[in-house]
Amino acid sequence: MKVFKFGGASVKDAASFKNVASILSAYQDEDIVLVLSALGKTTNKLESILEAHYMGGPNAKALLSELISFHLEIVHKLFTDVTAIVAELNDLFVEIEWILEDEPHSDYNYEYDQLVSFGELFSTRILSGYLNEIGLSNHWLDARNVILTDNSYRRANVNWAQTELRIVHQIPPLLAERKLVITQGFIGCTSENYNSTLGREGSDFSAGVFSYALNAESLSIWKDVPGILTGDPRRLEDVVKIEHMSYREAIEMTYYGAKVIHPKTIKPLQNKGISLFVRSFKNPEERGTEIKHFEVEPNYPPVIVIEDDQCLINISTKDFSFIAEKHLSGIFTQLAEYGISVRLMRNTAISFTICSTYEERKMNKLIDFLQEDFNVELIPDLQLVTVRHYNLETIEKYRINRKVLFEEQLSKMVQLVLE
Image 1 (tube, one colour):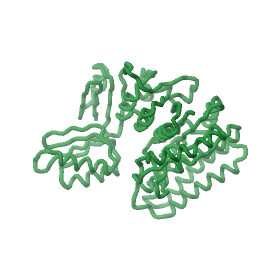
Image 2 (cartoon, rainbow, N blue to C red):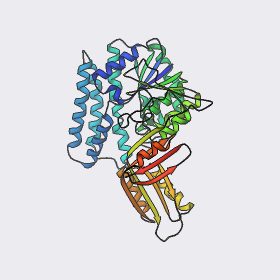
Image 3 (cartoon, rainbow, N blue to C red):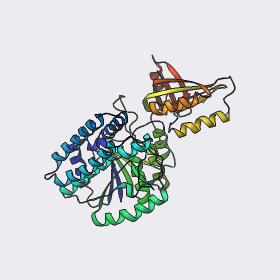
Image 4 (cartoon, rainbow, N blue to C red):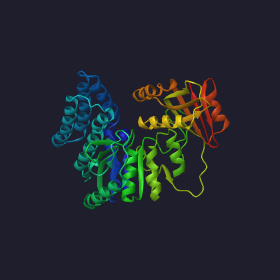
């Protein structure tokens, strides 16, 4: 049994759906669980609807109307008879309309998960219906019936014991009947039956959860690139594909910002020795990059990760007292409370500096809290460049004509925060 995960770029239009169907047609004799993201840019559009809902006024419904039209346009290009699929989608559209008719919930993160989780429900309904229409028989499974989480909205933690029991109970009988199961990434459900999400781009992690619970032969993540590259080809020239990579190296790369795989995906696979393939949906016959256990680490070329929208937060004591462990404990408690990830950090006698992705809502809450006891300076609009397996030539290329505000150098990695 294999698990496939397709992202939003693989189902961005009608032609993309047909391409996914073509790939699946080559695996009709194998048991496949397919985990699907929302259609390309749908999550962003749902986030815009949510923001408009909190601001008030009619704009949220106007944006929803655009999103509905986008999905229905694809449906009319795929289906001979749209009656059944449009009815299924309309039921989901009405649920969103009900949310927008109510006052926004006091907990923004809770409201986010109730609304934004619809993207994956749209996409999987369309794909499942289309595959059935063209003769690729499948079962549609609601991931919320099997992925049980806590109430940490927007970054929910999986209840592994209960989730594994549910997956093992429900999916094998479906595969025995039809060999293909279509389900959603990114979303789960709390014990109170509220929608939850696993974090932005969390569909990879969902696929890892399904792979772990089902003891899958492998997990294949289908992307618009030939595998894991040494950098983003949209930003860098002369990038090359890495043929083989260890679990450890994959975790390090994703932790420091590489967008090819969600950071949490690797651990459940490593725990059971399940190979992960990153493959191209544009060239499905190619093997891609294989990630697995290696007794001896392969040799890697320099790998460059560039992240925009970064900020530095400089925190210093008001009375020139030392930044001590009790201060750091309080700061990290708040970072965890607001879901702020630290990319870099350094402390001196009376100050502590962190680099993080700038998210205005979260940062405002953090600064408001810290200013009660500390002097706080925030520097936005920065760029973080991480070079793993670096050489001097690679590093100097990023220092030229750039102001370096923060630098960290380790044996295998250099990180630069640049204006």
